[in-house]
Image 1 (cartoon, rainbow, N blue to C red):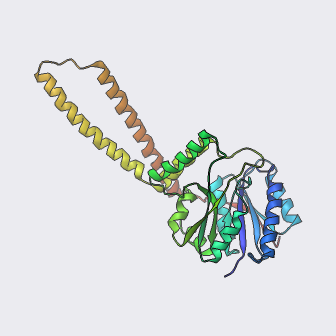
Image 2 (image 1 turned 30 degrees about the vertical axis):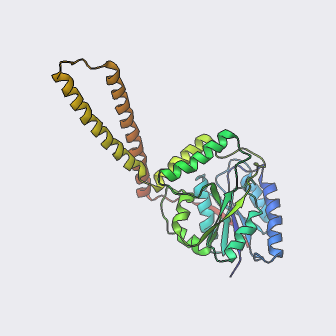
Amino acid sequence: MENILYLVIPCFNEEEVLPETALRLENKMHDLTIEKKIDEKSRVIFVNDGSKDRTWEIIKELHLKNKLFGGINLSINRGHQNALLAGLMTVKEYADMVISMDADLQDDINAIDGMIDKYAEGTDIVYGVRSSRARDTIFKKATAEGFYKAMNMMGANTVFNHADYRLMSKRALEGLSRYGEVNLFLRGIVPMIGYSTDVVYYERGERFAGESKYPLGKMMSFAIEGITSLSTKPIRMITAIGFFIFIVSIGMLIYSLIRHFTGATIVGWTTLMVSVWAIGGLILLSLGVVGEYIGKIYLETKARPRYIIEQFLNEED
Protein backbone atom coordinates (compact mmCIF):
# COMPACT_ATOMS: atom_id res chain seq x y z
CA MET A 1 0.00 0.00 0.00
CA GLU A 2 1.32 3.46 -0.95
CA ASN A 3 1.92 5.83 1.94
CA ILE A 4 2.28 9.38 0.67
CA LEU A 5 0.72 11.54 3.40
CA TYR A 6 -0.49 15.11 3.00
CA LEU A 7 -1.52 17.22 5.99
CA VAL A 8 -4.15 19.86 5.16
CA ILE A 9 -4.37 22.72 7.64
CA PRO A 10 -6.85 25.62 7.14
CA CYS A 11 -5.54 28.93 8.45
CA PHE A 12 -7.30 32.20 9.21
CA ASN A 13 -5.23 34.89 10.94
CA GLU A 14 -2.81 32.36 12.43
CA GLU A 15 0.45 34.35 12.29
CA GLU A 16 1.01 33.88 16.04
CA VAL A 17 0.89 30.10 15.97
CA LEU A 18 2.14 29.12 12.50
CA PRO A 19 5.91 29.11 13.21
CA GLU A 20 5.48 26.76 16.19
CA THR A 21 2.96 24.61 14.29
CA ALA A 22 5.39 24.26 11.39
CA LEU A 23 8.26 23.33 13.71
CA ARG A 24 6.31 20.59 15.47
CA LEU A 25 4.90 19.18 12.24
CA GLU A 26 8.33 19.19 10.61
CA ASN A 27 9.68 17.07 13.47
CA LYS A 28 6.69 14.73 13.35
CA MET A 29 6.91 14.24 9.57
CA HIS A 30 10.66 13.62 9.86
CA ASP A 31 10.12 10.93 12.49
CA LEU A 32 7.38 9.25 10.46
CA THR A 33 9.62 9.22 7.39
CA ILE A 34 12.52 7.70 9.33
CA GLU A 35 10.18 5.01 10.67
CA LYS A 36 9.09 4.27 7.07
CA LYS A 37 5.47 4.98 7.96
CA ILE A 38 5.18 7.63 5.26
CA ASP A 39 6.90 8.34 1.97
CA GLU A 40 9.48 11.11 1.66
CA LYS A 41 7.13 12.76 -0.87
CA SER A 42 4.71 13.54 1.96
CA ARG A 43 3.89 17.21 2.49
CA VAL A 44 2.25 19.73 4.84
CA ILE A 45 -0.17 22.08 3.07
CA PHE A 46 -1.42 25.24 4.78
CA VAL A 47 -4.62 26.73 3.32
CA ASN A 48 -4.84 30.50 3.77
CA ASP A 49 -8.51 31.44 4.05
CA GLY A 50 -8.30 35.15 3.25
CA SER A 51 -6.31 36.07 6.36
CA LYS A 52 -5.86 39.75 7.21
CA ASP A 53 -2.52 39.31 8.94
CA ARG A 54 0.84 37.86 7.77
CA THR A 55 -0.38 34.27 7.55
CA TRP A 56 0.20 33.92 3.79
CA GLU A 57 3.61 35.63 3.96
CA ILE A 58 4.67 33.17 6.67
CA ILE A 59 3.44 30.23 4.58
CA LYS A 60 5.49 31.45 1.60
CA GLU A 61 8.57 31.84 3.82
CA LEU A 62 8.14 28.31 5.16
CA HIS A 63 7.85 26.98 1.61
CA LEU A 64 11.02 28.74 0.49
CA LYS A 65 12.99 27.36 3.45
CA ASN A 66 11.66 23.81 3.30
CA LYS A 67 9.84 22.08 0.44
CA LEU A 68 8.06 19.94 3.01
CA PHE A 69 5.68 22.88 3.39
CA GLY A 70 3.26 24.00 0.71
CA GLY A 71 0.44 26.47 0.59
CA ILE A 72 -2.91 27.21 -0.99
CA ASN A 73 -4.06 30.82 -1.05
CA LEU A 74 -7.80 31.34 -1.52
CA SER A 75 -8.84 34.47 -3.41
CA ILE A 76 -11.17 35.54 -0.57
CA ASN A 77 -12.28 34.33 2.84
CA ARG A 78 -14.71 31.45 2.33
CA GLY A 79 -14.95 30.01 5.84
CA HIS A 80 -13.29 27.05 7.53
CA GLN A 81 -15.30 24.31 5.81
CA ASN A 82 -14.71 25.63 2.28
CA ALA A 83 -11.02 26.22 3.01
CA LEU A 84 -10.69 22.66 4.27
CA LEU A 85 -12.50 21.28 1.23
CA ALA A 86 -10.25 23.33 -1.07
CA GLY A 87 -7.20 21.75 0.50
CA LEU A 88 -8.59 18.22 0.39
CA MET A 89 -9.68 18.42 -3.24
CA THR A 90 -6.41 20.03 -4.34
CA VAL A 91 -4.07 17.46 -2.80
CA LYS A 92 -6.10 14.28 -3.42
CA GLU A 93 -4.27 13.75 -6.73
CA TYR A 94 -0.88 13.81 -4.99
CA ALA A 95 -1.58 11.85 -1.80
CA ASP A 96 -2.53 8.32 -0.84
CA MET A 97 -3.93 9.54 2.47
CA VAL A 98 -4.76 13.01 3.79
CA ILE A 99 -5.07 14.16 7.39
CA SER A 100 -6.92 17.40 8.13
CA MET A 101 -6.31 19.30 11.34
CA ASP A 102 -6.44 22.82 12.79
CA ALA A 103 -3.45 25.12 12.99
CA ASP A 104 -3.80 25.98 16.69
CA LEU A 105 -1.96 22.85 17.98
CA GLN A 106 -4.92 21.77 20.12
CA ASP A 107 -5.12 18.50 18.19
CA ASP A 108 -2.49 16.07 19.48
CA ILE A 109 -0.16 15.49 16.51
CA ASN A 110 0.96 12.19 18.05
CA ALA A 111 -2.47 10.80 17.14
CA ILE A 112 -1.25 10.89 13.52
CA ASP A 113 0.73 7.70 14.20
CA GLY A 114 -2.39 5.82 15.22
CA MET A 115 -4.32 7.10 12.21
CA ILE A 116 -1.59 5.91 9.83
CA ASP A 117 -1.49 2.50 11.51
CA LYS A 118 -5.23 2.06 11.02
CA TYR A 119 -4.91 3.22 7.39
CA ALA A 120 -2.21 0.57 6.89
CA GLU A 121 -4.69 -2.00 8.17
CA GLY A 122 -7.11 -1.01 5.41
CA THR A 123 -9.27 1.69 7.03
CA ASP A 124 -10.43 4.45 4.69
CA ILE A 125 -11.57 7.04 7.26
CA VAL A 126 -10.06 7.45 10.73
CA TYR A 127 -11.68 9.97 13.06
CA GLY A 128 -9.72 11.78 15.74
CA VAL A 129 -12.00 11.76 18.79
CA ARG A 130 -11.45 13.56 22.07
CA SER A 131 -11.02 11.09 24.92
CA SER A 132 -12.38 13.50 27.53
CA ARG A 133 -13.24 17.13 28.27
CA ALA A 134 -11.63 17.25 31.70
CA ARG A 135 -9.84 20.52 30.91
CA ASP A 136 -12.99 22.33 29.78
CA THR A 137 -15.02 24.58 32.04
CA ILE A 138 -18.46 23.32 33.08
CA PHE A 139 -20.07 25.79 30.66
CA LYS A 140 -17.79 24.84 27.77
CA LYS A 141 -18.31 21.13 28.40
CA ALA A 142 -22.10 21.51 28.61
CA THR A 143 -22.37 23.62 25.45
CA ALA A 144 -19.98 21.44 23.44
CA GLU A 145 -21.65 18.17 24.35
CA GLY A 146 -25.04 19.80 23.85
CA PHE A 147 -23.90 20.77 20.35
CA TYR A 148 -23.28 17.16 19.32
CA LYS A 149 -26.43 15.85 20.98
CA ALA A 150 -28.60 18.54 19.38
CA MET A 151 -27.06 17.84 15.97
CA ASN A 152 -27.81 14.12 16.17
CA MET A 153 -31.29 14.68 17.62
CA MET A 154 -32.14 16.98 14.70
CA GLY A 155 -31.00 14.44 12.11
CA ALA A 156 -27.47 15.70 11.33
CA ASN A 157 -25.59 12.54 12.34
CA THR A 158 -22.03 13.25 13.43
CA VAL A 159 -19.27 11.46 15.34
CA PHE A 160 -19.47 12.48 19.01
CA ASN A 161 -16.58 14.69 20.18
CA HIS A 162 -15.05 14.71 16.69
CA ALA A 163 -14.26 17.97 14.91
CA ASP A 164 -12.29 17.97 11.64
CA TYR A 165 -9.22 16.02 12.75
CA ARG A 166 -9.40 12.93 10.53
CA LEU A 167 -7.55 10.77 8.02
CA MET A 168 -9.12 10.02 4.64
CA SER A 169 -7.82 7.67 1.98
CA LYS A 170 -7.69 8.61 -1.70
CA ARG A 171 -10.79 6.48 -2.26
CA ALA A 172 -12.68 8.31 0.49
CA LEU A 173 -11.64 11.68 -0.97
CA GLU A 174 -12.92 10.63 -4.37
CA GLY A 175 -16.22 9.82 -2.69
CA LEU A 176 -16.27 13.22 -0.98
CA SER A 177 -15.69 14.95 -4.33
CA ARG A 178 -19.06 13.65 -5.52
CA TYR A 179 -20.91 15.76 -2.94
CA GLY A 180 -21.49 19.03 -4.76
CA GLU A 181 -23.59 21.05 -2.31
CA VAL A 182 -22.65 24.66 -1.65
CA ASN A 183 -23.78 24.56 1.99
CA LEU A 184 -20.95 22.54 3.51
CA PHE A 185 -20.87 20.68 6.80
CA LEU A 186 -18.07 18.14 6.45
CA ARG A 187 -18.58 16.62 9.90
CA GLY A 188 -21.93 15.37 8.65
CA ILE A 189 -21.01 14.66 5.03
CA VAL A 190 -17.94 12.47 5.68
CA PRO A 191 -19.89 9.79 7.62
CA MET A 192 -22.28 9.59 4.65
CA ILE A 193 -19.46 8.45 2.34
CA GLY A 194 -19.36 4.99 3.86
CA TYR A 195 -16.31 2.69 3.51
CA SER A 196 -14.45 1.33 6.51
CA THR A 197 -14.05 3.68 9.49
CA ASP A 198 -12.31 3.67 12.85
CA VAL A 199 -11.39 6.13 15.59
CA VAL A 200 -8.24 7.24 17.38
CA TYR A 201 -8.71 8.82 20.81
CA TYR A 202 -6.55 11.70 21.95
CA GLU A 203 -6.40 14.37 24.64
CA ARG A 204 -7.05 17.85 23.23
CA GLY A 205 -4.68 20.51 24.50
CA GLU A 206 -4.85 24.25 25.01
CA ARG A 207 -4.54 26.64 22.09
CA PHE A 208 -0.84 27.55 21.70
CA ALA A 209 -1.49 31.22 20.82
CA GLY A 210 -4.11 33.54 19.40
CA GLU A 211 -7.87 33.49 19.89
CA SER A 212 -10.41 30.74 19.30
CA LYS A 213 -12.11 30.90 15.91
CA TYR A 214 -15.24 29.22 17.31
CA PRO A 215 -16.79 31.22 20.18
CA LEU A 216 -20.27 30.27 21.42
CA GLY A 217 -22.15 32.43 18.91
CA LYS A 218 -20.26 30.97 15.97
CA MET A 219 -20.75 27.43 17.29
CA MET A 220 -24.51 28.00 17.42
CA SER A 221 -24.47 29.34 13.86
CA PHE A 222 -22.36 26.35 12.82
CA ALA A 223 -24.88 23.97 14.39
CA ILE A 224 -27.80 25.60 12.56
CA GLU A 225 -25.83 25.41 9.32
CA GLY A 226 -25.14 21.72 9.84
CA ILE A 227 -28.70 20.82 10.78
CA THR A 228 -30.35 22.66 7.90
CA SER A 229 -27.71 21.47 5.41
CA LEU A 230 -28.10 17.78 6.23
CA SER A 231 -31.57 17.19 7.62
CA THR A 232 -35.22 18.05 6.92
CA LYS A 233 -36.22 17.10 10.46
CA PRO A 234 -36.93 20.73 11.52
CA ILE A 235 -39.48 21.00 8.69
CA ARG A 236 -41.13 17.80 9.87
CA MET A 237 -41.19 19.14 13.41
CA ILE A 238 -43.09 22.20 12.18
CA THR A 239 -45.63 19.88 10.57
CA ALA A 240 -45.98 17.95 13.83
CA ILE A 241 -46.39 21.14 15.87
CA GLY A 242 -48.98 22.42 13.40
CA PHE A 243 -50.94 19.18 13.67
CA PHE A 244 -50.76 19.35 17.48
CA ILE A 245 -52.06 22.93 17.52
CA PHE A 246 -54.86 21.92 15.16
CA ILE A 247 -55.92 19.17 17.61
CA VAL A 248 -55.74 21.67 20.49
CA SER A 249 -57.86 24.13 18.51
CA ILE A 250 -60.57 21.50 18.03
CA GLY A 251 -60.51 20.89 21.77
CA MET A 252 -60.79 24.64 22.43
CA LEU A 253 -63.73 24.86 19.98
CA ILE A 254 -65.58 22.11 21.83
CA TYR A 255 -64.75 23.76 25.15
CA SER A 256 -66.06 27.15 23.90
CA LEU A 257 -69.30 25.62 22.66
CA ILE A 258 -69.87 23.91 26.00
CA ARG A 259 -69.22 27.20 27.82
CA HIS A 260 -71.64 28.97 25.45
CA PHE A 261 -74.51 26.56 25.95
CA THR A 262 -74.03 26.50 29.71
CA GLY A 263 -74.24 30.29 29.86
CA ALA A 264 -70.60 30.93 30.84
CA THR A 265 -69.63 33.08 27.87
CA ILE A 266 -66.91 35.25 29.45
CA VAL A 267 -63.53 34.01 28.21
CA GLY A 268 -60.50 34.52 30.44
CA TRP A 269 -58.17 37.32 29.34
CA THR A 270 -55.04 35.38 30.41
CA THR A 271 -55.96 32.35 28.32
CA LEU A 272 -56.57 34.55 25.28
CA MET A 273 -53.27 36.45 25.60
CA VAL A 274 -51.21 33.30 26.17
CA SER A 275 -52.80 31.68 23.13
CA VAL A 276 -52.15 34.70 20.89
CA TRP A 277 -48.52 35.04 21.94
CA ALA A 278 -47.82 31.30 21.77
CA ILE A 279 -49.34 30.83 18.33
CA GLY A 280 -47.73 34.04 17.04
CA GLY A 281 -44.32 32.92 18.29
CA LEU A 282 -44.71 29.49 16.71
CA ILE A 283 -45.69 31.07 13.39
CA LEU A 284 -42.63 33.35 13.37
CA LEU A 285 -40.36 30.46 14.38
CA SER A 286 -41.81 28.30 11.63
CA LEU A 287 -41.34 31.05 9.05
CA GLY A 288 -37.72 31.41 10.17
CA VAL A 289 -37.02 27.69 9.75
CA VAL A 290 -38.72 27.59 6.35
CA GLY A 291 -36.82 30.73 5.33
CA GLU A 292 -33.53 29.08 6.31
CA TYR A 293 -34.25 26.20 3.95
CA ILE A 294 -35.42 28.50 1.15
CA GLY A 295 -32.19 30.49 1.50
CA LYS A 296 -30.15 27.31 1.13
CA ILE A 297 -32.16 26.25 -1.92
CA TYR A 298 -31.43 29.68 -3.41
CA LEU A 299 -27.68 29.29 -2.85
CA GLU A 300 -27.67 25.76 -4.27
CA THR A 301 -29.51 26.82 -7.45
CA LYS A 302 -27.02 29.65 -8.02
CA ALA A 303 -24.26 26.99 -8.14
CA ARG A 304 -21.57 29.49 -7.19
CA PRO A 305 -18.03 28.15 -6.73
CA ARG A 306 -17.32 27.06 -3.19
CA TYR A 307 -13.81 28.49 -3.39
CA ILE A 308 -11.35 29.98 -5.87
CA ILE A 309 -7.64 29.21 -5.50
CA GLU A 310 -5.40 32.18 -6.23
CA GLN A 311 -2.10 30.35 -5.79
CA PHE A 312 -0.91 26.84 -5.00
CA LEU A 313 2.63 26.38 -3.75
CA ASN A 314 3.90 22.83 -4.19
CA GLU A 315 7.33 21.22 -4.06
CA GLU A 316 8.21 22.31 -7.61
CA ASP A 317 7.58 26.05 -7.15
